[in-house]
Length: 479
Image (cartoon, rainbow, N blue to C red; front, side, top):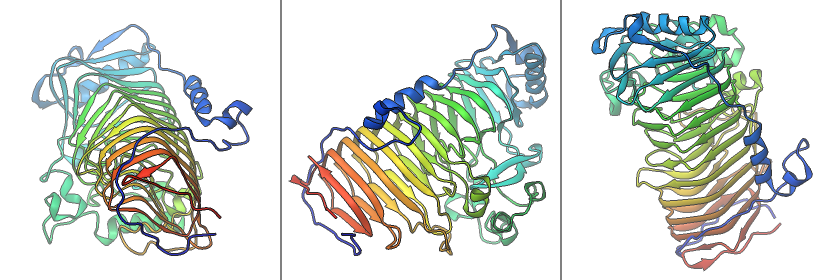
């Protein structure tokens, strides 16, 4: 049967571990990976090429950079990157010290490398950021350059143990979101003014050519921090990123991306930690996310603009990460119109009273799209505020999010999960009658404490295998 009304089971306490998710993994995989999707993940990992650079160094101080935290070094960064690229590539070295700059635009075969005590301070003067082809909340646009930007580049990296500091706060960048929580005051302009964010969304809906979606100065759409746009073979390793204006790491339309050992600590509005969008073959590993929004949010475009681009995000792997504050640990959506599939999450720790959910899919009938084949295993969850697993086809943050594109969510597997405090629900799943959420499996899951076992609407085939919630073994709900 299809569950077509809310069902809420009251307390029963304790969640413990294990896992092995089994589901058909697509027509293009081998028999072995069809039987065990984690074999497919291993094949994806092996297929992703790693960056390689010439053993040549280009120190930005040799190109005029001054480490006083006050002198603008935009030209010095540009000169060092140009020299490196023109000579076949290598490392552009940012030595110890504080370097103020405007946007940094990377080239192919360039590794921007920060020394251990290096800090790049990005100017908060919006006039320094030229218009480039980028995106804002899943809609492509000509807007302020991201703070670090690479477009159509191959073999490019940001590495080292230094700090990237966007200098955003309640006086710079953040007030543009239009929320008093982040410094906006009534009467001041923001992205919420009708000619700003809403106008861009409308342009995406009616198919205005991207080159005619000209925003930037006077429109208050904050720039992304690090964006790799249509790039191939990318590495971001070990850096610490703080005080972001908007989304932090944003690979868009990119392939073969590795994010390794990065620390994101930024609690501003829309400060998602990492947002792979229209991207494929992405590994996010050994990272720490402490954010003002989703820790990791896998995306594929907003509404009509996402359907226009039509590139699903797939083969996304998250390993050995720590999620602290955030709206969700690993999230798919809400800008998800081109679909998401083949997501693998393993060996992560999620724990904070300010972490709302562990695993989340958020979409609605304006987004549409198919989200499928999501595999999660070996999670240790301490405390989450709302629920362990949330699947929502009625996500509505700005209002007026109902349309004619009913989404699909299917094939979600959780195994070997232990949770101390799951918040309000173990599973919260809300589907459409005409498009029920299908094939959800929890195996070897132990939730020690949660207010309600689950709340389900229009869900078909939810299996609980060796799963204990509030000290009670939970039985599957069969067709």
